[in-house]
Image (cartoon, rainbow, N blue to C red):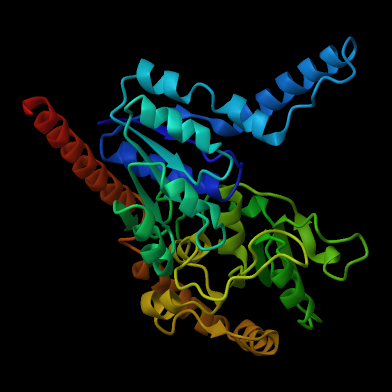
Length: 365
C-alpha cells in the first residue's frame, strides 16, 4: 500500500501525531509519500507576500493575499502529487490548515481521502470537513456519534506514543535539559493560565515550556517560562528528569479570555501517553479515560487547591513516585503508534476493498 501523508501544517503537537502515525505506517510496510504542509505554508506566505508587494508598486489597489490564499497555495500540489505517485489513498492529519476546496478536488479526481482529526472536541469545523472525505477518525470518543451522523466511515482512534522518542529510564542527551520539581509542556490556553496562577508555587521549581506568548511580560507566571516550543525528544527528556509532570487538559475552543469552552470530553491527550511511556510520574486533571487506562497510578484533581496538595505530598515521597513511575509504561505498552497505525491500515484496506467492489458492480451494470 502506498499513501500520501498530508502533514498538519503546525510544527508541534499535531506534527508529533503525524510523525507517530508515519512511524507506525512505515513499520507495517506502507510506502509513505510525504506532503510537508508546514514548509509549504512558509514558502507560500513568502511568495504571495512578495508578489503582492511588487504588484502594489504599480497597482495600489492590488488585493493583499489572505490566510486562506496562503493555505490554498501551500496545498495546491496535493492532487498532482497523489496522481504522480499513484497512491492508493491520501491521509490528512488534523486538517486545521487545509482549505476544504482541496478535499473537493481530491474527490473529483477519484482519490480515496481520509482525515485523522486531532482537535476533537475543540474544533467544530472538523464535522464540516468530515462530510467531504471517504473516511475519518476522531481522537475523542465522546465525539464519535456526531461524526458518524455526517460520515458513516468514522472510527475512534486514540492518540499514542512514539516508540523511538518516548522511552523510560535515563537516555543519552537527557542531561541537556533542565531538571525541575514540576514540569508542564503545552500551550497557554486561558484556563491553564488561570489554573497555574491559582497555585502557590513557593519553594517549588516549576518549568513551563511551549507556546506561552499570551502571557504579558509582568505576569506572575512569566518567571516560570523556561523555554518556548520544544521538540518531542526534548519534551521526553524534560518528563524523565522532572520529579512531577503535569497534564492539564484544555477546554478552550481557541485563544483568549473570551474563547468558548467545551463542557465534556473523555479521551486521553497525547501528553498522557507520552508521560506514561517515558515512565514519568505525573498528576492530571480529570478525564474518564485517565482512570480507565491508569487506575490509581495517575492521581487526578479537579481544583488548583487539590492539585497543590497532591504535588507537595508526592514531591515529599520520592520512593512512592519511583514505584508508580516504574508501573506506568506497562499501562500503555500496546498503545503506541505502531498499534494505532495497524488500525488505520485495516480501515484503509476495508475502504479500498469497498470502493473496488462498487466500481466492479458499476461496470457490470
